[in-house]
Length: 275
Ligand code: C2E
Ligand code: CA
Ligand code: CA
Ligand code: CA
Image (cartoon, rainbow, N blue to C red; front, side, top):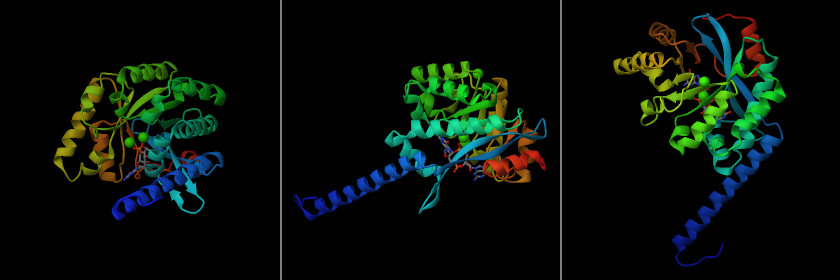
């Protein structure tokens, strides 16, 4: 780095270079992590109120970094999205989750998150189709979770991709419902199978009468559109009881179980010691 102009300018340039260097290094690390099996998929159980037992799990990726320990996906998913690694990472997670689910009891389903950035690849549905074929998982056992930002960006193209995915026989869930800008308008742009009510509403239902009214209205709206509802982030028996009373079909959250390694999930479903 050459000092051109003022010291301040030089300082900024140095700092920017340091930042770029750090980011480049993080990207290289992540690329190696995908190749070297440092990634792991954990499973958070999903409880069905009607059946009274766990009916599947959401796949959540984990990065076990050799020196930093467990790195949160909230940190490395955005990095993967910015650096173009998201296709590889997303494909890796999907393949791993479908492989796992294929070995589970046949009534167990798996949900996998898709990043909006994966929709920039026009071959997304083709990739999903080939992973289903290679792993032999019944499409009806796979749910894909997308956020409404998928419908925000270039929505005609993305809606076409959602239709292609849906045609494969997988179900499509709208994740983090209620956190975006104009959620209601997204509901009729594509016929989702399920909405997942964001944990921020669920967290506040016992403290804040407004949140309970919103949750109630969301569930009524979802049901009138023929959509199933999952309540996310249920942590207490009180929240569980309220969401059951309000008519949510599925419950997810620490109250049922935190995301866990696949072996723990399997032990859990073999021994249905549920609330
Ligand atoms: P998400 O899809 O909304 O996943 C739910 C997050 O809430 C998970 O965080 C989960 O551990 C956490 N959670 C579950 N139950 C509770 C609860 O009762 N209370 C609270 N406070 N939190 C709970 P996690 O695993 O850190 O994942 C964060 C986000 O990273 C996910 O949010 C998702 O957007 C993204 N992510 C994770 N895995 C993948 C992946 O394979 N692909 C993509 N594209 N994104 C992923
Ligand atoms: Ca999700
Ligand atoms: Ca459908
Ligand atoms: Ca969510």
